[in-house]
Amino acid sequence: MSTATPLKLAILISGRGSNMEALAGACARGVLAARVVVVIADRPGAGGLDAARARGLETATLVYRGERGAFERELGAALERHHPDAVALAGFMRVLSAEFVARYLGRLFNIHPSLLPKYRGLDTHRRVLAAGDAVHGASVHFVTPELDAGPVVLQSQVAVDPADTEASLAARVLATEHVIYPRVLGWFADGRLAWRDGAAWLDGRRLTAPLVEDFRAAAAP
Ligand code: GAR
Image 1: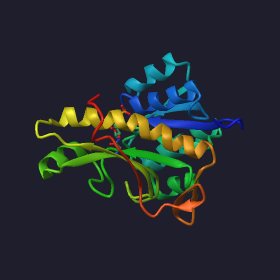
Image 2: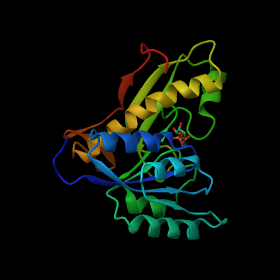
Image 3: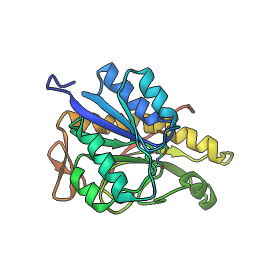
Image 4: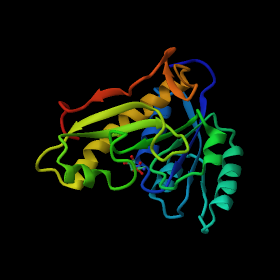
């Protein structure tokens, strides 16, 4: 772990917040050289808020009132109070405008439950099962204005079992999300991962394809 000042990390959630917990846990264990400065939810009932508070993290809740501009002004203000070096979308189910993304370009990350560019958008596990894919996974990527289309840094791969249900597959993918998201943020915090010329760079090399962590042989979670 780096001995430099920890990266100030803001995390945005909409629901249960297990990825937020994985990130916060990695910070607490010292394997991710970052400090969670705020957890922001766009839903007052987001389960992750309680989990964040239980960890002693600062939280904020914003309510979307049907106008994206107003919501994003509130969100920007809530973030800037904490001067984050990086912002992690962790199950944050709201599409951000190009203007908002531009403000955080190069330090705004997302985790998506599919092997991007396959299955952008919603219901990824159901679509994978319907297509009969043998391999599925999750992707950590830099956020750019186009939904789920920014440069992917790292993907996890899991095997799809013929007996899988949407729930069993989602659970197996989620367990890998909790590994790869802290890993990517750790690279960023350590200065190994950077955004340059519209691409992701790791250790001074431009990533021309996502890195892959293969969990297919791993025991079921
Ligand atoms: C995760 O599977 C995450 O990849 C997905 O939502 C879930 C949130 O779970 N994100 C998206 O679908 C974004 N398009 P969590 O609240 O327990 O982290």
